[in-house]
Image (tube, rainbow, N blue to C red; front, side, top):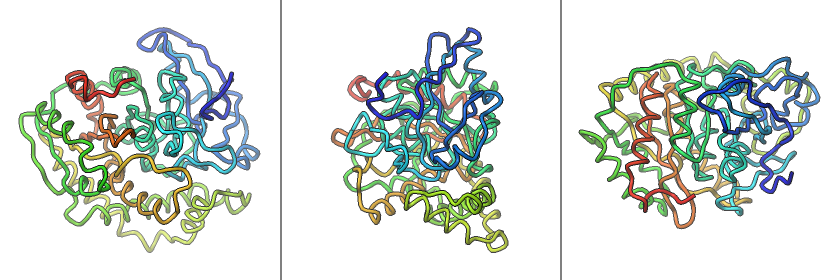
Length: 397
């Protein structure tokens, strides 16, 4: 079968349902970092493929979906060892963004986002450490969800940075996103949210051309809550938060993969190779204070989101950048993007991105972040909000 959008490493890896339930009749693909019995993952790099053994069983998250009636159709491309937000891969090519073919799909769960956006499958699994589900979902105009850290098993998934890694999922409807949560998430309280917080400093990160992309959406969203408050989230600066995330993540990544990299000397794309090289220069002792800053952020976010509050931020600063965009511009965009995505990442919070903004013809997502273990409530809120919106605000599919 033709893979027009280059979403797949191998679309012939098919797993039939092993039961029936909520997901009966649906199909899904998975990022090529999830264990599938008898299959060797690439993790986006051919040296990884050749230096690892086939999996002896499916990742538990895959098995749960199969047990609930879903059928797995194919494994999708990823950035090399998941250490990028662009979706470009020098070894296997870049998946084509179905919503804007001249632009990047976003990474590192690029293939999964493209498979969903291209209607190859109903939904897809990815991993989200620094934004790797949320960002490609925004760029490709689909719904994406990152759960509370630790609520969904990462067993059988190649790690990147374990204290940040999550299994996330993407779909073309908020209803399906919620249905998947019913299968993968534990039962949680159902009390509705009553307070909306608009993160002023997060919205300040939008690119100038995107400043009006959400005006109607914010107004409609506010109407769903009893109160709305505009506030600065990071009094010490979101750039400071990003730096904490950047260094803590890199330390964990090198601890996880540094030995393999030094032994095997794999070839990486330029930007990814530079990040790995830089990570290898860091010493844990120099950055012990960053753990205290992360703890401060975690407590601060718990305080901000207490009493049934939800935080609204843009998922990304703007639409997907064009393929071949100069590195200096991409670095600025990466910094802005990571300042947004590190909020949930540092505090381990659930975040959903909704494809409700538009920048000319480009999709752009708005995100809602809730407190820890409020995943099911957040998915339900988002689904109700999408259903309540007028037709002119809902992207035609």
